[in-house]
Length: 220
Ligand code: C5P
Image (tube, rainbow, N blue to C red; front, side):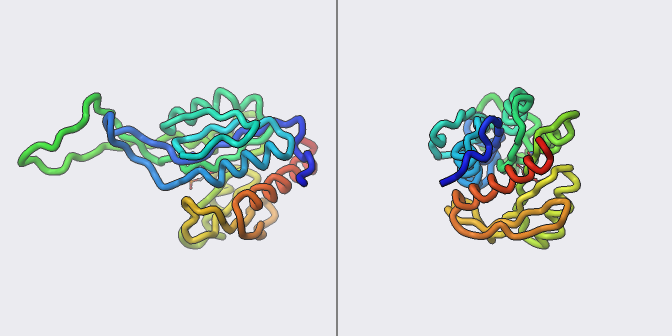
């Protein structure tokens, strides 16, 4: 039983990978399955929130009662988030947003040219959705995720400050992509403490409870 901790609140969640087109058939992406973000969206809905899930390409069904908005690229995810963030009191960024996108998207499939070397793909940076939302004049309560392969505590604490978010969730699993379980650690202004390990939905419910408690403390 999950008490209705977030009743009356709107939660905006990003999830999944983004896909950055190179040409009509190719692109840059990553191995994010979206499972953690979908679990967070489901847990927030269970807790009574209105939930808007902005999702990159995944194979997952939308959780019951959650409004899902499908996007492909990081820029589309950015636009979808910025159009809706004004209505949200909580923003949870779980998406594995591609850091870079090709400068040129070719209109036709690029052909292999006999005798020519491999083509170079010029890249430009994508907008940082979480940092942009956190920098709004009246931001929602912002929660970021960090998957670090080394020095998690140091890197996650630094990332929290860099993105200027009150709460950052560190993924401790060596490789949680596509898995149903995870191990999470919370980083906030007071330091860090483990949230636990296990099923992503169980962890998501714990995270929702932590967020609700912080909102209540801040009077938000
Ligand atoms: O900088 P890094 O990608 O490691 O930060 C991870 C956090 O920032 C995640 O919460 C992710 O969803 C968010 N992020 C974002 N937009 C980006 C890059 C990361 O919202 N362009």
